[in-house]
Image (cartoon, rainbow, N blue to C red; front, top):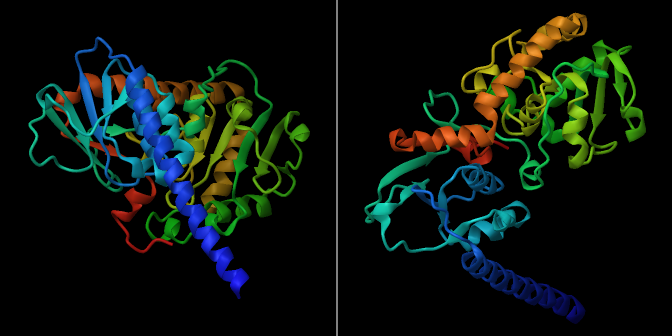
Length: 367
């Protein structure tokens, strides 16, 4: 009994000391970043003040604006780093940003926040709105690739005119229970990832290749549906875009809490054509047989897989070019961020998909 009490006490003390250590570590990083950052000569100054815990989307938000020629100051919110240290500490690697809780001359700054300011008189206020589903959006930060791709600068130029070795490709989680979340059907009326994968595996038994070793992946898989399930092995992030670029089509199946997933953006970034059930979740919407292949339900999914496998190379190339053009104009962070800044004084509300927080705006009971 005494041993149990000491063990419990030790865990409490250890947890508190760890929290104190992280607190001082983050504060030290704040100071270091403020000391080393150099102010740009840009005429636009942004003060970004985030209050809700938006997880990894906080890093992605700052990274988005970092591609523009602006000065960025962030409110000094330690809790945002406590709650999602894995990705949010990458913010410290972004050049020329500072952390402050007080701005001397707010009239020189554009204030971007998920809360309306009370007292201070800013040059302009942009409300960051996470309530993005099922509404018309004039200005929106596009959904992103995985944060590590931006952090490690793993972008690749698509090979538009070269032959690819895989016809239809999917990789990632899918067999786990969370990928059959009822919210995907109840709120969005879409097939869950797990259901879609099971339909494909059961119907296309001769054409599905379940890859269990990395060495099996880099072969010729034309007229095949190649599936890499996360429980077998994970493709390293450094090789992910290169692997996607070897496929003609990507099965862009829903995520856990919402249809959109980072992988559809990653596929489109290298000209790989998405097979998707949610073209309307893009802004502007994707167009069937122009920059994607769209399926409506389980039967249509089977039909569209047959269609993709039957398309001629010249037709695939035409759609691939359109995918690449769409990504460049509407999803590329480096391009879209500049368009947002160019129009910043016309923007009162900027919509931003933060997954869990965005979903909570339309449903309080997603599990």
